[in-house]
Length: 166
Image (tube, rainbow, N blue to C red; front, side, top):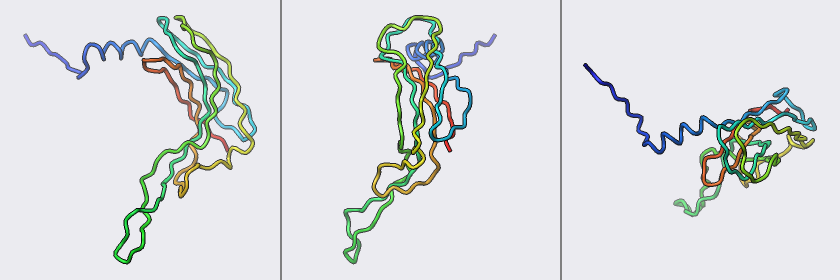
């Protein structure tokens, strides 16, 4: 008779933490995924908990990020005495973030709760650029909604939904 044992590399404590995260869920429901500047994004955030949890807030955010390559001058001089320009690797830079609080600090009860939201997209949103000197834009802006339950001294529960604005 053979006995198989599987090791996941997780301790009992971290394995238990992983199981408890399955008991919590947050979702975002919206009517469409394509928007224009000046439109209003409306929808619901659904929070599902299997047991009560203390949290700071439930929020929804509209976030725009862009991959950029930043250039900067090096402090060293080359053979002729000129400073060289160096380029850092690409990095994701926020160009827009609007956060709307849907509920405040309290003990959130088990069960499912829904939060309605509306976010007005600014008319000039497509003209926003990264706030970095020497930034070279290397990708289109990635827009998304982020729902979050902020749990102090614990793992937040969050959900991201990609949208397009154009």
